[in-house]
Length: 104
Image (cartoon, rainbow, N blue to C red):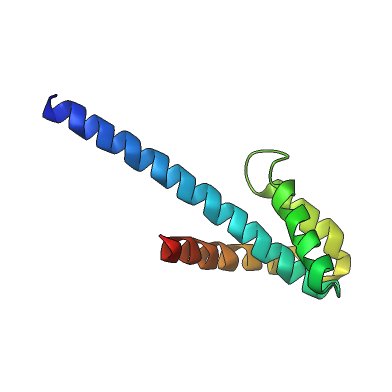
């Protein structure tokens, strides 16, 4: 096996790991966002956890995060404006990424 093959295999492994971490962080961010939104909606306990899972599953509608944003914005109505939701999404993306990295 050549050095080139070793490098290629290492790059492929790194790409796969990065993709897995990105997926986990996005799912975690969506769950955290769902928990935040559930709090604004007055949901607690199992009801809040169930709602958070609906936010996670809404991310499978289309690529990107717009489907998640639309779901949360529609559910919250006038309880949070677009800027607040997007800011919370960005903040929770960083939190989720760090949580996933801490688990490794």
